[in-house]
Image (cartoon, rainbow, N blue to C red):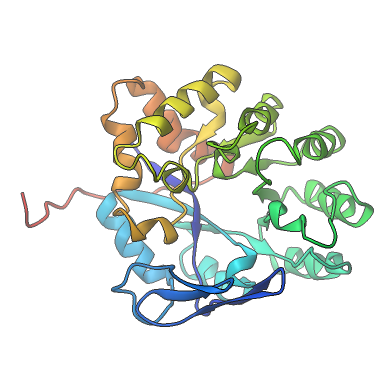
Length: 305
């Protein structure tokens, strides 16, 4: 089967601010993260850079044909680097552009990114709920952005806040823009109460759910993440397996597991049929993100075999 990662991150320089607190790369994979030092990358990535070439090496070894590169405010805007990556590796990556929607006036920046040629845009919507204010997904400027994206057939990758808090707003967006392709990340923030309300949004024809970060959310139980497999089965009972896609949330999740481990527990489980595995791990993403001419990657035996 062809395996496609629907949620990964790349950056050359991690430097950002969220709710007045700094995020900045340090050394040996560590970052200053909102008041404390956290292991943001595997320790062997000593320069704090999550580059396309390192990721491609992981993808080739794990036999992952292609990946969607999303963005997050905790990394800072990476549009310049991701545009270069898109031009350099068009068969392997679909890179999302991103604007800072936490303050008004972002529509002009978004228009420039769309003119540049980005075929997808990322919105870390959960970050729009701030201690002192909230930017609603249905505000006039945001709806203008969604209208523009719908007209130009630009995909929206969005991470919603925990539970059902933003689900009614997203329901209104979907109703207003039925041709806007929408991928909801972090599997609806599974493990948080009310996550099923995000999944139910995929009952609309233009909405999908991707599992980026699912190993983070089930980190307490750890490999082989039986709870994550059961969550996929529950989501499939709500919207159908054809609406669900695998994502890794590389590289942050790689501090605990290898890249191949982020999906092989789905391959090994007996709770999913072979057809369901093919759909979830690649075929649904291939159709939804419109990947063509996927590379075929041979299996390379490692030194332990």
